[in-house]
Image (tube, rainbow, N blue to C red; front, side):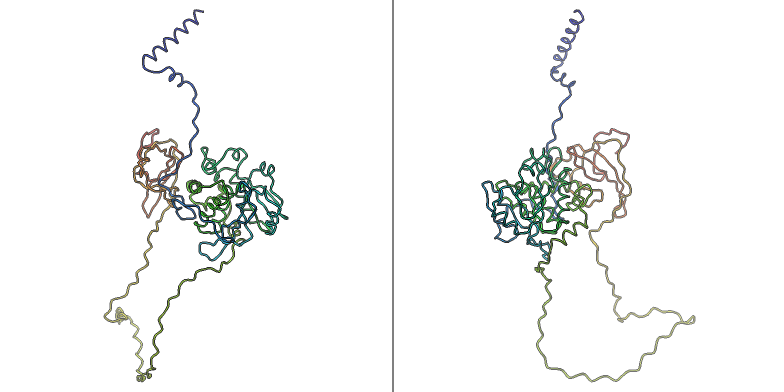
Length: 462
């Protein structure tokens, strides 16, 4: 009993001491209690980075395009529209032109849609008239079986799920594209596998294909962005087709969501093409992409020829009499070959009295010769600030420039971690670059001279 009393008195004295020092007891106890980690919130878009779609900067804003006339690219196939608009978003991708307008997507081969669970017999007969051979369901296997598509002619059906079932139950709106845990529609294992299978099925299909998710806008919309990018469509048409769903279904999509998706891909892979071809991305090779183009593109007949120079016809003149031929002159004797007794002299210029002509080589501006000499991973972390208004890049080869740090006044105050150090030879000069990581996990390459050391936790000096 005495032991317990002494322990109680000791705790009381400790409490009074802490309160006298101005330290709340709750704070002291909290310091010994494991804290629950706060979930990471989604990164905000980097203000210095503009998403790049197929080598071009995406516009800052885009409005939903107008509904095109029937039969034009983006127009819907007229099916019976139910109360929730499930049958209003069925479209043929045929008619979209490539960037150079020399080819177009062949009509009657590629159809995007919402789930085919509420179609009428008339709708089924209309779709069967397209001789669809394969229906690709981008929903989960559970939803594929729970809400089965109607049988369309002799078409077979398969699942290429983009979400896991837990994701499908939880995600909505922009969460499809940018989630707190980083497993967005672009990078989750299910999405990578699902879109790889989708594109591969397009190459191997023996006839027209229809693909869909639930409403035909998010998973199907991104599938169409990937497909149209590989086929070489204009960015304007790719974005318009993505936003066209807003004209046909109640469940809307937003342009900022597409920018978020492309921006995430830019940041991790450097470009959409890298994401499509990379083994860590969709793993859809250049040969497979060429096969896709050969299968679904046809000559458009709309190629714009280069304008030919128009020459003004000269007025017809009276023929002039032929000039009287001059008498033949004696041929000029060949020059004497110099011997050891005859000194060699420089030949006279072709045009006597005129300076020699010098043809200047075309100036090759903008080319930078760069070679990576060495890369090493730093064993001990260093905390640094980025100096204001310094250029930094996505990759080590300095091909994808992000912008300049400090434009918003945020970067100079943020604490970055040094990860790697590399030596580069740029136009004959040796320069040192370092890979740094932001508090949000973003990685950049920047010159070593453009960072300021905050805290040296190792024996390395800045």
